[in-house]
Image 1 (cartoon, rainbow, N blue to C red):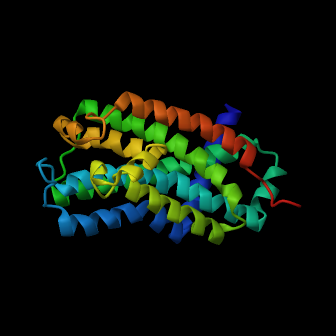
Image 2 (spheres, one colour; image 1 turned 45 degrees about the vertical axis):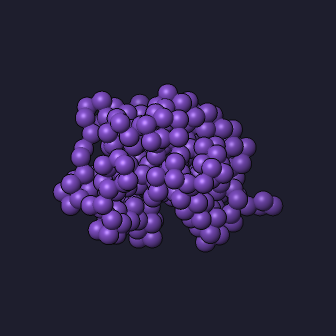
Length: 263
């Protein structure tokens, strides 16, 4: 119970620190909401050719998937180097606190950001752009995609944090990566309309599978015929995310640094 209290206390501390950082709130929590409002207002009531699916419905699925990257991968990849550069991680390593509490706190922050972000996306999408909400089975898929996606993205964000010396350089690395994954994974464009080389490249990374699984939640079952394999491939999506979790564990274990090299 004492360990649980430490985890809860650290999680609450990390959430409070993050909420005080306006840039983190804007770019990690609110950016997908801004994108939905902009693209939804311009293209929302148009339909995807030969499908009858409104673009706004397609966008919500993709933005919820990419929100997993914003709230975990990008957030942690930027926040951790900032704390390393200020010496916060070095002090924390010497504190009488289990090191695992730090990572639990960071993951809790990602969960809170994603939960708030999802609530905003679904509320604005439903009440402003008439987005159809999922069925009970759809919510179950939404839940496991969110959990697996958050865990995989958080681990990869922790691993990537080793590539930057401070938050500014981390932002220059992580933000372009997120944008690249979004444009190649079918977030803004129908995946099968992208060039073949782009589809093959995106299939190696988690966002393509998270977006595809999210589409199964928010789009009609018949839309699965327009996916690359002719179905939403939920089993394969789950397997790919589990594999990336395993890869993330290894990368984070060997890449994460509490201090800059030489200290």
